Structure formats: structure tokens, C-alpha cells
Length: 267
Length: 310
Image 1 (cartoon, rainbow over the protein chains, first blue to last red):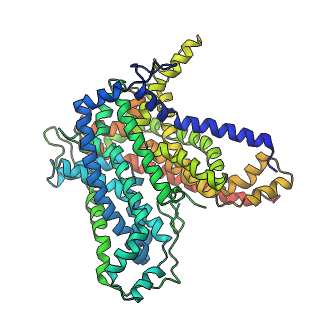
Image 2 (image 1 turned 90 degrees about the horizontal axis):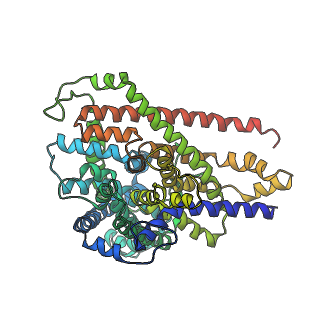
Image 3 (image 1 turned 180 degrees about the vertical axis):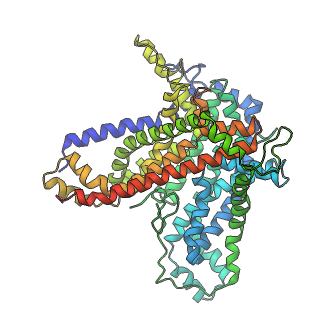
């Protein structure tokens, strides 16, 4: 029914659009691997000199380490908090379900830059003007929790609860049932939520822009300051690391949960 | 957006089968599960936003971030300043253009994704979602390499003896960057609805003699409107509140509300003024989105009347 030329036209359009989507990402990786300062065609040759420059740059390595520390803490906090919340909302929330679900996803729906300003002013108002690191961890946890919540909820909704009942009927206590039955079955969702949270924190910009202080510069903020004055490919190395992380997340999520769980909208 | 069983982002979370749900014995202790999340959200999200609203009513000062004297002055100053309105208009304009271009680009991608064979769909999902997970900053940097005056595109133009195109530090650059960053959101929103449309409907329309365009306009598009609505609202809201892209790709030539708010708060230390501007813009956004959703709802409601030839 669908004519061949329509199919070809569609395929060509889609190919161009995917090329557009992937272009800047491929370009960053090429710039990091290119031996020249400017990317040209044809490229001047492969080289790892920018990776060496990155590893030797004190400001970049310091902020990379800082970002990893921050993302680890935010991930740990948001995974625990988000998983607990999704368990409660999916199973026990009753008539509060919709209101709470809106509240829990709200940090993703409101402008991040506003949340940053609101937190900055709030910390000052309650006398935590110099919370520093703790403030950043709190802000990042706020942004990461919805990801964990959404992904673990999606898995919990597909969960067969008769398995838990069987365990209970065979004499297992509530905690034992949770550790031996529930947790192993929703593990994929939790891991993939945690991985999402880690990347969300690692790449978070808005909150960090407002809450980072002296001596506490996460990598995105360091990059932002750098890119305002220079296009030096050292920044491309940081980008390549981030791109590598993103691919790990996509593959882990696809394998454990299936990316279909991430469809937005509905019909 | 407000349909039962969906959250703000329109993410479909199927209600757990309530009727056949047999619950384990009740324990008050299980409510402990919700306490940490609720505490974090109330203390570090709800309260800060309430506080922001309160601060927008305080008096600015040169010696402290604000003085605890209530005033409406911040709002009247803003409302009377033509510059405020100029920046607001420009921000909304960027939002509308970005959303429209995103919609045009995303629809074919979403259709293709939703109708792809099951085995290939995973691969296409990876292609759509990967850009989403690479930080906005990194993607913007990729565009800087491509768009700057000595960038790849202008190098190519020069090699072809064509005049160089100013693609960065202006609206063009900002729009390219914004469209690129938000296309995946639109694709995911629309693909979700297209997947629920039975392909048989399209085959039926085609076999009854409708062309590709007519089938799209009369069958697929109307049925996918919920996804289009969710996607456009999401992209519009994200676009007008983005900070990184206008500041890096726009240089100092493109001024949007988020840039101005951050500048007011962090450089001028005028917290009440910045808060008032943020709240004002928040309200304007709500009104614009509300009007749009109502107009779309009415438009969708009228479709059956126009479709007498079904």
C-alpha cells in the first residue's frame, strides 16, 4: 500500500535528521582525537595529545574528581530516596497517588535555573549561606530523584505481586520477602535509575551554576567558564568522557529495562 | 496532560490493577518509605519556592541581599520597564520558533521510530536518547566547533568560494542549538502516541483511495494530537528556561529572561528584583501554556465535525 518512493523519501529524511542529531556529538569526539587545534577537513591526523593536555590540566582534573564525588553522593541519596518513594506510591498511596506523583516529578518540570536561585536564596535565608558542598549534594539529589522514581515506578508497575504473596504464604517475613523476592526482581530498574541519576548529576549545570562556591567547581561549570573564552580541544576531551558515560547509560538501560519505558506522552 | 494516570511530563504510568490487588497485611511502618522523599521535596523544593515568592516582595538594599520590608515595588518597576517586556517578548519568540521547528523535525522521526520493526526500534531508540544523555554543555560545544566563524561550516563555505555565514553569537546559533537539544523530547512524546494508533487505520484510508498526505492529515495527525500537545508544551517550557545555550551560542547579543534573572541575582545582587522577575515570567509562562492547551483542546474537539467524510 505504501509506495516504494514514499518509503525512500521517508528513509532519506530520517537519515538526514539522525545525522543532525548526532553531528555535534561526533564532532566533539573528532575534535578530541584530532591532532590540530582547529578541526579541519580532511583532519590533520589522530592524536591523543589533547587527552594528555586534559590529564595535565589541574583545573580540569580537580573539577572532574569533584564532579565524580558529587555525582556519587547524589546518586546514592536519590537512589535510596527515589526507590522507597516509588515503592510507596505504586503500592500504598491510594488517593494521594496523582498529587504525589506530580510533586515528585516537579523538580524536572520547573526550570532548573529557577530551582537553583530558589535554593541559593533559601540557604541564605535559613542561615546556611555557606553550606557549600552539602548544598550542592542537596540540589543535585533533588534533580536526580525524579529519574530514579520514574524508572523504578515503571518496573514496579509491571511487577507480579503474586510472587511476594507466595513467599509470604511459605512463611517468609515482610523484610525477608523484600530482600529475597522484591529487590532481586526490581534490581534492573533500580540500577538503571541509579545510572541515570549519576549522569544527570554529572551533567547538571543549572543548580551547580548558582550553588558552586570557591574551590568547588563541578566539571560542567569549569567547562562553561572555559568555553566562554577558548575553543581549545582540551574541552572536547571532557566532552568525550561525558559522551562515553551517556552511551554506557543507554546500553545499561536498554538491557535492563528497555528504553520503551522512557516514552513520554501517551495516547 | 491532565488525564488520569499521567504525571506532569505526560509519562504514562499505568495504574496498578486496583480491583484485583490483594494487599499484604497492613503495617503502619511501611509509611516510613515515603518520609525521606517527602521531607527532601518539602524542605528543599516547596519551601525554597515559597521563600522565593516571599523575597520578591522584599525591599532591595545595597548593604544586604534584601531588607525585610514588604513592598510591591519590585513588580511595579518591572512592569513599567519597556526593557523587561522586550526581553520577555524575545524569550517567548525564541520559544515559539524552537517549538515549531522541533515539531516539524520530530514528527517524521517519531513516526519512523514508532513504526519501525521491533528489532530495529531498540537501535533507533538508542540514536534518539543518546543525545539526550550527553550534557547540554557538550552538545553546545559541538555546535560551537561547527558554527563559529572559523568552524567547519564556514571553512567549507570558504573552500567553495561562498560568502561566510554568521552562524554564532546571534539568534540563528541559539535556535540551532535549542532545536537540537529539544528534538529528542518531542520525538519521545509523539512516538508514544503514534505507537498506539492501529496501522490498520492507515491501510484502510489508503485502500479507500486517500493519498499519503491526506491519510496523514485526516487519520494519523488527529490521533497523535495528545502526544503533539505534550511534546510542544514540554519543549516550549524547557526552551524558554534554558540558560547554557543562549549564553554560549548567543554570546552577549541574545538576551533571554533566564540570563537576565541570573545576572540580576548573581552580579547585581538584587535578590528581590531577580525573584520578582522569575515569578513574573513563571506566571506569564503558565498563562501562555494554559491558553495554548485550551486552544488545542478546542481545535481537537472540532475535528470530528470537520471529518464528515469518514
